Length: 156
Length: 418
Ligand SMILES: Cc1cc2nc3c(=O)[nH]c(=O)nc-3n(C[C@H](O)[C@H](O)[C@H](O)COP(=O)(O)O)c2cc1C
Ligand code: SF4
Ligand code: FES
Image (cartoon, rainbow over all chains, first blue to last red; front, side, top):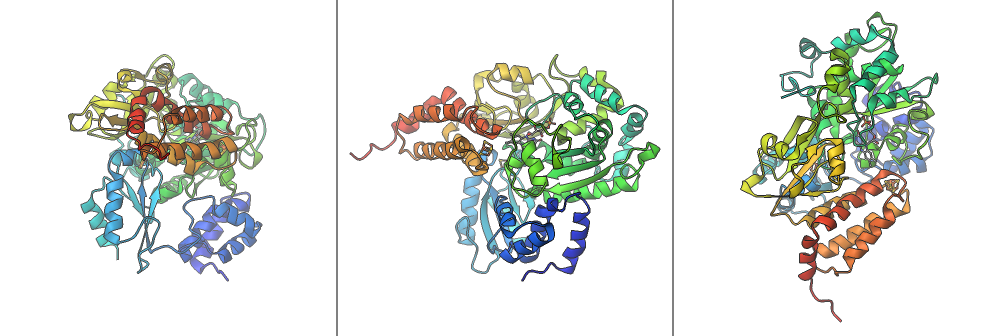
């Protein structure tokens, strides 16, 4: 069973009011479900489908199209390194190696304490401040190994 | 230095409506409401403004293509910014959200639109929140909502966050995504102006394009048309990245030589190295060699030089670069972002990636260069949407100008085991 929290319910009301057709609330609701559970569970897809008049299969097909949705558990902090051209020209590979070594995991893996997941990301549209990473959708730019150390140390 | 979009952009707290108004913000609304909507469309046409999202389509002309007398109509501001190298809309959203809102209001008034969405890429969550706060302020001031400033014009405005998919920047995929579907492109025609969001007439414009509109309404189309070249009017935000000393977003007058953008604005090539190659308009356009660096940065000159202005992302590579490694990155991107709807793109990007990876890993074969060219030929103009053609641009242009980089890797390839 998946139940949206009370806080989520009041946001859902506002979200639905934005659109003439409720199916448009698909991405916002998937985002809310993920915020609540850490990833989008099959039960959440069923619930969202019920609300928006879509089959669970339809919701799943939408959910899996977009890279920001996880369908499996991830760490508390998801670190996404941009590996596209501008970041590559500015040494993102070394930085990612540095971080995977530091945390003792490979890209795509989660640390044993479930704190960190490291992912590769395509261009994050901050190219002139390369290399760039995001931690849970917060931007960190002009990275150096020292800066990565600082950012990770501040995450509790 | 002519600045239209970046004028005062670093003023502290420009995201607050008070500061924005002190700089003359929202002054264009009263001027617009004193005119008929069609007059605003004519002004934008006369300004020569072309779309800044990538295709460079004349903005006023697009507005005049809206299906006549069909309502409701919609406006979607395209803030999906995800073309590699491009980071200008991010700076606009982050620093001057009210400029974008003002531009959207003017567009909506001109096009008789009463509902506007700003489709913002999901990774821009922080900037979506900035935009939400700015929209709330604009409602409070009476710039949004019912009967705006007594004009009788109504407009509701919302943000809509994406969730990570480059293809959703393509306008028809954006609309499908906003309707709650997988972001797959639609057949065109019908174009969005005729049948767009919820099958209603819809304007899709890039963030930067819409941010220009207040200037045109405030200063008149002639003032805008006086800037730039004969056919490329106005200024353009150029995102300079790669091997330069001062990467950044710079507002340049169209027609400025690329050498000047690199040397004067971006502080020259890093470490005193030499320029090897540059991509003038984002990953989807052909790369060019150093000897084309004096090309003026405008739509026509870049086409004449064999590339395109695209989204305005200038990616600079110095002479330490092996171009193949960068083409591999870009191709890996297109493989990842291909929506999978049509075969030439879905399979072609994958195949090209496989070959490039082999060449890069020094297990390639010389005949693979012809194979790459052949795959490109089989994708060219045969894909459902422009992503397929975008994917071949870096491959073909790199083989054309930097064949030596490929040959170096192929020559050092280990001899195949017989
Ligand atoms: C694969 C692909 C990705 C695109 N991405 C974007 C984008 O991120 N932002 C954008 O404004 N336009 C993008 N476009 C262009 C849009 O389809 C559309 O032409 C543009 O938003 C129209 O606005 P404009 O006329 O103001 O430029 C993309 C096009 C394609 C084919
Ligand atoms: S060209 Fe690529 S992105 Fe475009 S519809 Fe075909 S598969 Fe999808
Ligand atoms: S290439 Fe890394 S942010 Fe654009």
